[in-house]
Image 1 (cartoon, rainbow, N blue to C red):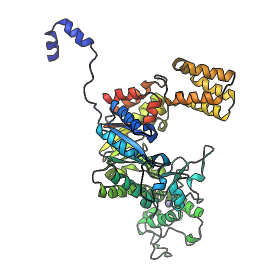
Image 2 (tube, helix red, strand yellow):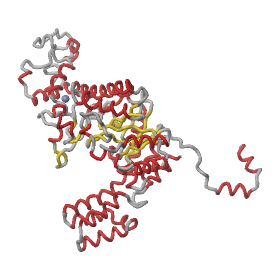
Image 3 (cartoon, rainbow, N blue to C red):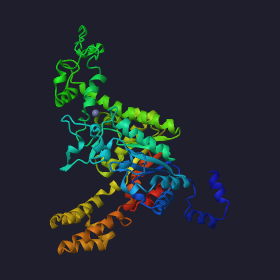
Image 4 (cartoon, rainbow, N blue to C red):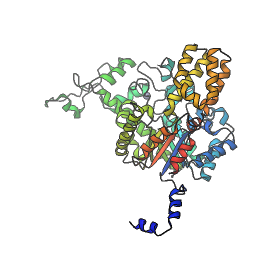
Length: 504
Ligand SMILES: [Zn+2]
């Protein structure tokens, strides 16, 4: 009412002018966490390219950068520690990438989280070659690179989180500590802080250490009286009601069991002979415990040296399910992780795009309950993945060109995106059509696709789709968003959409 009065007091012309003018956006961004996940290759290999990269972040109102510093490829800082130095990626031996990046980010008030692939190494990683005994093993005694996934060799080498001394305390924690001591980093970011989930999500780890430790940890026998059956009167109607006195669970000839037989018992056996097949519960509990234990140990070690460094973690969307399938019950991370970043990616939800938005909203509401003990809940969104329908056919077409695939298959891929391509990249469309009619140089055309896919024309990837996802996230009342990844945003030409969203 008050406002209407004051409007009527000024001349009508001025009122109209004020109504028609586009309001200048001068207000500060309202979302507390405006973060992006990034790979070092997104920032280039020179000081100038890093500066330009950080400028772009600042322009889009990003205030937190989560940058990879340890991946399955190696380390992205020039570690001079003798045992770590061979693990440094070649291009980063003489280029102190984190030092320049952090300096430039801090100049622009952008916080930096150093992103570590915790338990995932590469099949040919230096540490894997040096310490194959630290690898996680299947019941057959094989490490993950021996597995085949979708017809191809599995590339990640998963390390055993539980083993001591082992990868966790001899390699990973000292490495993170070195980084935190050397650089003015704001937080350490956990990723792959779990067991593998895309192979058989319940068959790691059965290394020698875990085969010893799981029965000990769950009290399946008494180390002081290993052969005692520890039987007690059965005076209650329910078999499992006699659990407190803990009878000996392991069979008398346990030590003669092979690794496979031991693994099978630990996964499929019963606490009481003839009772529920419940030993898997203790196996999953053991895994969840060791992953959470790592987050505590690394927190304590780093805080000793740098009392203000914080921690963030990329986690799966549902801790109840990921606790069972990958040992990642992230509710247990709360005291040692301040920023929880669930990867609420499109690929983690079924249904059509609109259905997925409903599932996403539902999921975030549930995550707010699960994450009640964390200081911050920032929702992870995979931007580039929203455009798989537009991008993947061209990606496959490019592979077919390089592998000399059949024209009919290439045509089928083109058909999926032909209409959009004609509008947004008519030259490329014409070049593909011409090649399919009368093949020229496949490499020349594949190179054109390289260029297209690393910087798609504005609109080919519709920014609306990303904006809809981001708006759905914001509507749930969380305090931050973290977008995967800066490389994908550049490739999809989506920086303006992100800048508009973060600037609001
Ligand atoms: Zn193990």
